[in-house]
Amino acid sequence: MAQTKSTNTKRRTFRQRDYRAEYQRRIARAQAAGKSLSAARGHPRAADLPKPAPAPINRTDPRERALKMMRHGASQAEAAKASGVSVEQLRRYRLLNTTSERRGGQWIIFDTRPQLFWIASEGRMRSVTLAFDEGGGVGRFWNAVNEFLATNDADHLEPYIGEGVYDVRDKLWIFETRPNVLRKLDSVGELHFIEIYADVAK
Image 1 (cartoon, rainbow, N blue to C red):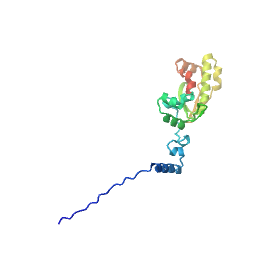
Image 2: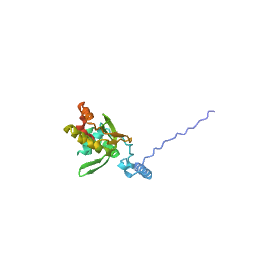
Image 3: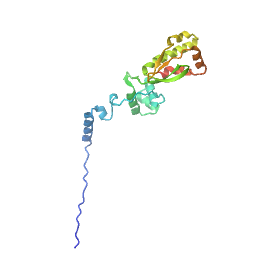
Image 4: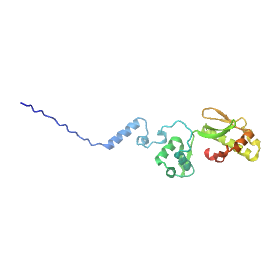
């Protein structure tokens, strides 16, 4: 006699999700981990973002161009659109790399990252990475070189004889102050960038 084998059919029960409760639990977990409410909601403040290791500014990056526009009066949205990046990308980049705030409709942006500078040292042009507060010394040196080239008066170079700047690896680069060497660099077009130096040094 054939036995009839009974089979139990399992039915799946779909539970309706409580998205509000899930959201509240996510917020609670994030705050318990020490995150701010903004970070828990997915909109971190500057203090919530991980700070990258200091690196030289890449001036070809469209976000850098956008920051420059903001320094000159553009809004964040205008600068992002003109540079071809999203407002959120620019906002995050600004928070990660600068200290910035809006005052009276104008962005005030402080940038303490190391920067690449050109200096004349040991008879050649050198590209060196300097801490942000070393740029002023390089600028004053090039102003003196400009004065010397314009007047042929080597007295403009005298304050910089034996002086130099330390790069981010603590290597000292001595300024080139020999008149004949500077004239040679100028004659072969090595010093053509000085005219735009002020813009680079910002």
